[in-house]
Image 1 (spheres, rainbow, N blue to C red):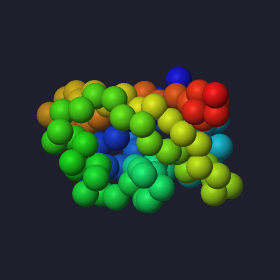
Image 2 (tube, one colour; image 1 turned 120 degrees about the vertical axis):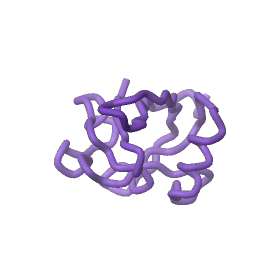
Image 3 (cartoon, rainbow, N blue to C red; image 1 turned 135 degrees about the horizontal axis):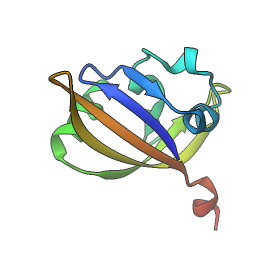
Image 4 (cartoon, rainbow, N blue to C red; image 1 turned 90 degrees about the vertical axis):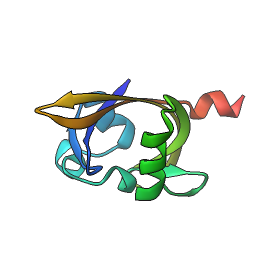
Length: 104
């Protein structure tokens, strides 16, 4: 599973190796980037307002699309959990490429 940690401003603070692989990007091109630059929702850019709505909705799991460095979109299942780090809200995103599941 890919793992991202996103701060309250929507900036990526951490990505694991599998996350780099799924996004087909190196850590340097993911770290401190807006999450809305990496995810698509309903064939559109996953906007900052959609990110905020997701956080406020309390929804834990959604289907979205990953945007690979090549511009390719891949279907993904994303689970979101909020936690506190140094007194700030942060978000743990765990995501899986489910493109093949949709092809069946």
